[in-house]
Length: 267
Image (cartoon, rainbow, N blue to C red; front, side, top):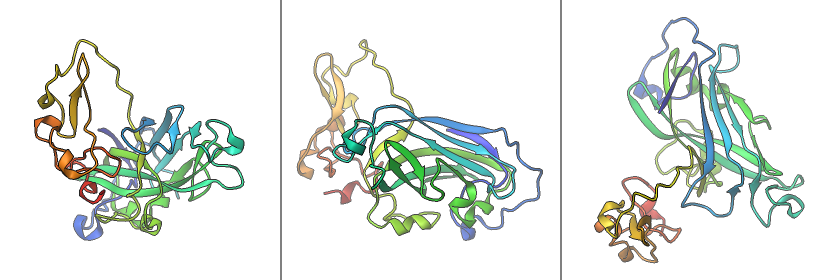
């Protein structure tokens, strides 16, 4: 969890929940910044592939009209055959018909609250590059997130889990912040996350013991590595972590309802 200080930061649970948190305080240090790589998520959608890691940045701002923060998403070389521009690898989204309505799902920690999936910011993909729908650019001001940015004033804001998703079932839900549970903005398949690609250590393995893996994974191969447990029905998910979850996800792999609220609804 990375922390920065902003003057008019991003989001709160609701005005009723947080109350009047507008406090008179000096302007925040506009130099404070959170930045992360954006990498392919797995398991997830195989329709959109990042051929190159991108960058996601949140930077505090004291400039009028910026809403206290600027958000920048820099991605290029996204591949989505057969919808690449002129069939060129890494050029997802032809100029004449860009891929639209994708969602940057944002989680935060603020005022003692950990809020996963609190906002969904829509973006489009043209010739492999991303641009926010708000202004057609790869950078937006905090004002694009709505009036609730005013609920945070010169206080620490932690940037939590960030996912890039395909369009949800009801994109108009993205216009509301904070997002309600079960919303139609962030229920599309996730294909990228803010994070890193972790290396491999051949000296560490699960030695054929499923209990050393999570409840959604089983130990496979020699040396053993934890891999997602495959399934077609819920009953197949009885081995992961030695117990299984009893929940089969829509992607044919076992999922955990405690970690993924949409898990039980995926099949």
